[in-house]
Amino acid sequence: MIFDPSLPDSARELSLGDFWDGLEGLDEESRILVSVEIKDFEADPDVLAVLTDFRVPGDPCTVALTYEYRTRPGLGRAPTSEKDFQFACYGGRDPTRKFGHDVRSRISMDVLPALRDAEGDLAVWRRSPGR
Image (tube, rainbow, N blue to C red):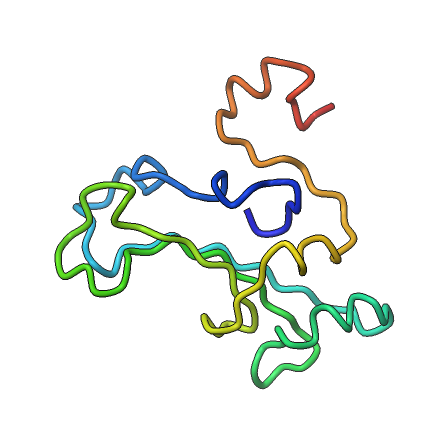
């Protein structure tokens, strides 16, 4: 969801079914947050150049990249469908510091594809992350 440069934005959208079943209900503050911290990148000038704007305030040796699926601003009611939500990818714990494909494509790492249907993906060897 955060790193895979081959994943189109349309596939980054979650759904109501991705929220924990134990929630008593969704409200205007409902969100799913995935955040990754990266450390020890200073020795690689290419990575440093890409990630320097996403350092965590107060900790210049740590970068944070975040995916947030949240209700649309100003909704004014409890969300009832996926249309009431939006996602954002941002860095440094600052929602105004958005990033997209330009950053994802320059972070060199091996990324396993996201498991959307774990049972189905694991059953088919071609789509299995175990491959």
